[in-house]
Length: 359
Length: 71
Image (cartoon, rainbow over all chains, first blue to last red; front, side, top):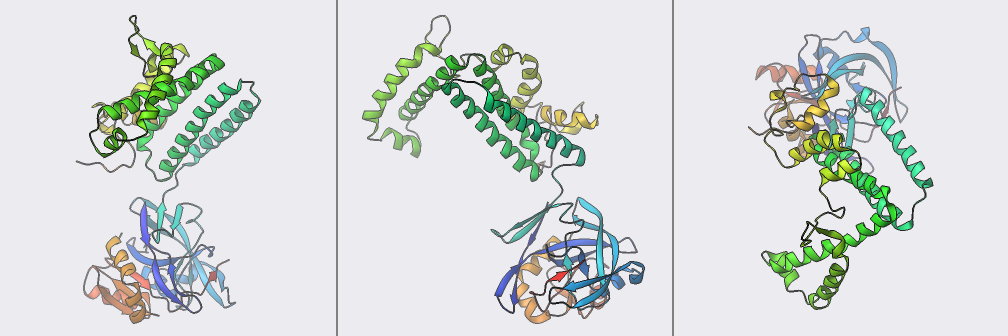
């Protein structure tokens, strides 16, 4: 990704305005690159350069296809189109058509063709800068992405016709909505080429999917159990905070006047639901999961034991900074394997993506 | 890429506009090292004090509100 700060420029009718600029490098006839700073114009179909750029880059201006460019005011200028190897950031480089005018009396503009339709161009008025980033999906990945979107639509369409008790539908929707939030976060990271954090999100999605699967095997009873577990979490969390007033938040909780009323209520609800969640033969302790087993058992119960080993354990190792997971991908036996294995290699070892590596 | 020089152009845009509107300028290491009516003139001046290509070129437009439509 490259970041390009905007400029303040005076205008005839609107005073000073922000104008987006970008830095590019263009290859000349001698194969050397020259850096240019030019205005970004989403209204221009093609990028435009002044006549002297052709001379500077050693181009035969007339050899390019002749076109006419028109200003909105109506003035016409002749230009010739040349396709020039252009660098937008250290890692983004490909041919871009430029209309090079036969005069100096035009602005240099970075237009749409092969720029806006090939890259992610993010105009961010919040911080007055434009971020230019490589596409977040390659063509083959885009087909997979479109397939996933279609699949999601089908699943949701079927979901709406599914007969479920109200309580189960409510709980299932909680899992589905949380998955939607995680997926939206993943897309955001992918667009920024920061998908190295994917294992943490995949782990979350996997856990949600396991729970949803388990819920739907006995919807009504399990949905109620899930809702009851709220009281376990609430009681345990507030008790732990009040018992350890170390730090400003826990001290504020411990000193709260609402405790006198709230604690007995929380305790009563906890005692009411607690018998469902007791663990072990002595039944002394309470499970920390509403489904009363660990994730591996849950996966086995819903028939996903294999996926648990392949997906969940690898992602958990990544999330916990396991030494195998923090090895660089080049040191891993999957390094150099087929492209289709790369995402998996990223999951089990190394940071893989474009995350800066500290040495 | 000449990120520092591009940032310098942004940071000093008002002053550069006042001084160089309508001209091409070449900037190297936070300094205007070439000025001219064409890219070649500005680049030739810049070459006198450094390596070819180790600067960034900008045409400082006199008018910011001219919109161009290219077919």
